[in-house]
Length: 407
Image 1 (cartoon, rainbow, N blue to C red):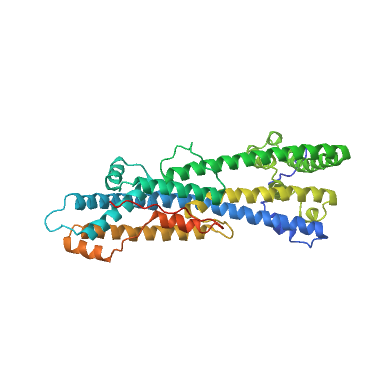
Image 2: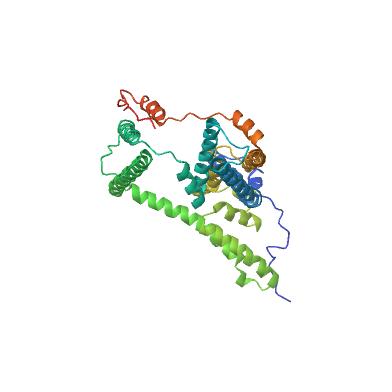
């Protein structure tokens, strides 16, 4: 009589029931069971969110490289063509293209704005030369006055005492120096706070050991880890491929063991319980009758797993938030990002079409004059901006404006 062969774990196909569905087959016995089930549901929901973002990231990258990237390159090329055309109109106007003072001023303002925007995006020697060519020289009295009022505002508004050793020769360089100084102060503050937390932590650690609290925490951590290890060992005992004589079954067990190892390494209790359910080590009845102590361990592990999952989703979403210029990820979905991306692409296409039309129009003297007649010069006085900022500071009176020389 031949020896009986134990039934395979895979004789019957897995029904595909999830942990959530298994738990739903019975009512929770108490609040602890309710918390456990709620955590299981929340983790499953967050896993689905993460999968949606992972799937969408591929589509996003495809659209950026296939649609947005080429469009940005074309737009930059068209803007540079416009800069070169305006430089030609200002430097060597052909017959019939001669322009009045106001028209030339408008063209120069358009050119300057385009050049500044393009240079912020990327360095370009040709554009840098054009910026220097059309940049108005700064009156020395104006420069000194702007430096003085900027220094005063930095002192009053931000509490920065800017001395004479900063090496700045313009308000912009002074602001850059102030920004570096603020960053240094923030780093020093964070270092101080970190050191203080460490000192407090060491103090609390000493007190906890003295009262026995730390020992209890360590014991609880060991017990939680042991509960996870128990689930892992049961799965390993059932799935170890070296104990399987059948080649096909050994391959399937090997694949499952890989999932088990990955889940154990990341403290992924939910996946381990799901695998137990999948190979019928546990069922709905077992899940409803977990001992209170073991249930408390499971609940702690699931809380940590949920927090890690939410943090992972947040990190995954940050590049999309930065790309779109959004501050909050609350309620944000891949569909929202895709709609915004489509809107940005559509708006960029409109701008590109308008630029191409302008490139044609600016070569026609009559159309150029009509376009310039519609363009309004932007009044720009750096003193107005500085004084507007200054009056927002309580009790601050800006220094008297020096008389500026007329050029």
